Image 1: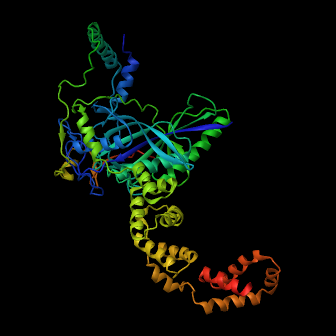
Image 2 (image 1 turned 90 degrees about the vertical axis):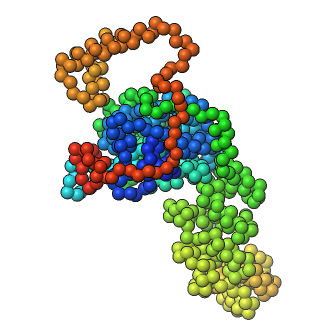
Image 3 (image 1 turned 135 degrees about the vertical axis):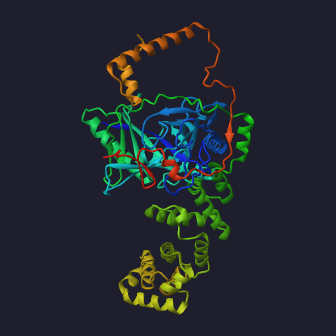
Amino acid sequence: MEFEVIIGLEVHAQLLTKSKIFCSCSTAFGAEPNTHTCPICLGMPGVLPVLNKKVVDLTLKVALATHCQIAHYSRFARKNYFYPDLPKGYQISQYELPLAEHGYIEIVANGESKRIGITRVHMEEDAGKLLHDEGGEDVSYSYVDLNRTGVPLIEIVSEPDIRTPGEASEYLKSLRGILQYLDVCDGNMEEGSFRCDANISLRPIGQDGFGTKTELKNMNSFKNVQKALEYEIKRQTNILDGGDKVIQETRLWDAAKGVTLSMRGKEDAHDYRYFPDPDLVPLAVNDKWIEETKKSLPELPDEKRDRFVKEYQIPEYDAQVLTTSKSLANYYEECVKLYPNPKVISNWVMVELLRRLKTDDRDIEECPVSPKLLARMLEMIDDGTISGKIAKTVFEDMYLTGEAPEKIVEKKGLLQVTDQEEVVEVVEKVLAENPKEVENYKKGKTKLFGFFVGQVMKETKGKANPNLVNEILRKMLD
Amino acid sequence: MKITKEEVDKVAKLARLGFTEEEKEKFASQLNSILVYFDNLGELDTIGIEPTSHASTISNVFRDDKVESSISKEESLLNAPDGKRDCFRVPRIIE
């Protein structure tokens, strides 16, 4: 049977504050275990949590940038469950009355723009970290580090508007881009400051109601999210095609094995007994606060995309891709400043640079080719030092070594041959070696011209100036 | 009866509490009388009144985003029944 895939994503993003959400402990990453703790985040009896105002400011920015409606009155609730990384026995989160609801973001899927709804954006505290001694002396224990307990998070829940794993990945990239533009989250998936869970279900095409969903966890990169969803689609399709039913459950992605596995022993979970946290007073956000936050918003991806189209005269698709991440947009604008031909830069970034980064699963921040090096290389094409074809070789070398293009050209002997005599010599050699083709050409098979150009380029390892080759060939053949 | 013994069982399990059969009977009846008492509130006309979540009427109590010194890890672990390697130690929770 043909099925339609329904995906909704839940993102947890760590907010870039200095201190925790309800106490003054540091949020810095990588400290010695349990050194960023205090009676409040340890959940000692009798303490009083107080909300960090910066957390609200940052969440408001996200809510406005994702076109959400802001609640003038919202509050915090206790989500009750037991787990060793949760010292209080409850997590402070928002349940009814979250800060923001009913928004959307735009993504590009299959070359087209698509709107994905945002159900809600709310604030909550993170839990601690569990360490397991793999193969060590005491495998019967787990260790708890509570430094992360109480670090501020926002949860962003999407509508079930996503239809393919590719769209899911695009949604995450766009959302992360927005958070980075706003400077509210560093977006590092490996370090866990940007985490994603996915709800996925299948339904026969044409059916209105949703099928039974599973929740996928433990995917720590865009690639893994995509792979986990692809695997789950196959798994659920097989179940449904076999006439069986999908069981509603949480499944963990095992990246090493490439499968999702059922999480056992959670059958009596999900009874969180939420209730308003009596320790925290309600949050009232007035219009003035909202207006001030609006004014403080930087240029967002959509606005930047429109400006790029207008200012640099590049296609909308290029502009969309270039503005997905703030760092990539900055990289592009830096290049344009140094080499004011926006279209040429856009082509190099979109084709060569992004292809290379994608192969290595790297971000633009880790790109060894700086805007300065790229601009210098493009100038070398313009002044005839290298050909456009050789530039690709130079680019690859710059990417691998981070060296300057001049140095690479010198080291590898890639200088373009612009010396007339040298090219004439090669052309003569090529013509002498291919008498049949020359004869056919002279009989009117002019298509063979390209063949001669190719042979000359081959002979000079692509270094001959193409214009010069054309000119000399014409002179000698016609 | 609003609360059955099974519901007491469930709530006890969620709260990680263990009770004897007699205690369960006793709590079921006590919880029932509490809920019956709350039913008295149903006699009041509350149309147009927002549900109360807090006894006080204040809102917006904030702190600034400033780091202040935490307590030492030794102090943090002082009350823990088991600690090692600067961490709280618990029975292993994944297989």
